[in-house]
Image 1 (cartoon, rainbow, N blue to C red):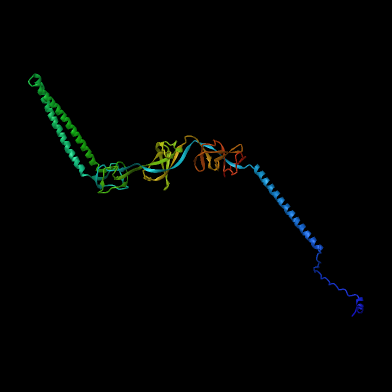
Image 2: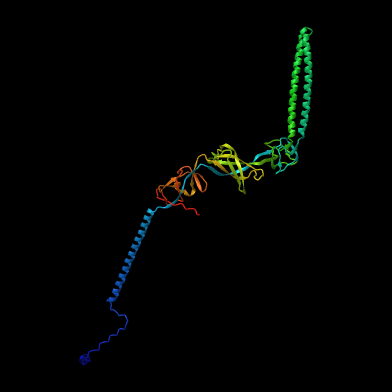
Length: 431
């Protein structure tokens, strides 16, 4: 078939395709490379909103920082201009008594260990521990037969010596008479001179023999006294009124009369008056003297108080401890106190010089040591102090303050030297 035959068909226009009708609310499809105008404007609005938010946040931060800085500056200005209100107390001198409480030990007024003066065996014992005895009371008896033999021997020797004295005295008297007669006869020529001299020397010899016999008798008498005393030592007696605190012997015990190697038979103490030993430190010892009142307390007996008086002091400090040994006598008629008890002694010591007392709450502890804040013309001045004694609520100082100074009580932590302060009014006591 040729082209002529197909011509009539080409002359008629072909029908155009009908485009599909877009649905409502359906998204339009854009050709590639083309953008929708509405989308780009939305992104620009979003970016602008984000920028506005960033600028607002930055402004808010700057404003808040400024407010904080302003508050800090106002606080610093208020702190610089703030004048704290403080309570003060006045430093005062106290010339009165110094009260000191020190540890001490009780002792018996008289204490002794009873040793035997005679060696032997105990045949009787009359007392035991806890017994109250009187001076001269018999405590025990010792038997020593050899001492009795010595007494009998020296009694006989003394009697023999005394008889020898009497014999020599008789012979001396006879010689004296003969010598006188021979002297008269020799003078008249009836007797030779040699006989007179012989009788005179015989008289002198008899005189010396009598003197020797007297010395011998005296020696025997002293020996007899010694052994008689040894015999009396066989009876052990109490040397003073007191209480037996220790017994180391019994019937049949062998006793040696030696205080260094032997053992004490008894121990006694006189406790009607208790002696209290207390060591006073050097800082307080200068005012201690006899007559000062003392109060003795025993921790185990809190309801009892014993009053005594300082009666003796050592007048010299112990080199090792720098303390003064002080003795306090306490009446103890009823025996409430016992020797060897730990106790405390409260002494009322007169001050040698007035003391400056500062409240303990006014002390500042820092790297500079101990200080107090003294207020002068509403200005606080920090001063170094030297504490000599601590009494709990107050301390005694000897440097840094003077009588009449006003010190700050419980000073603030940030209080510095030269700060202004105002003194708070004292609280009125409740009616």
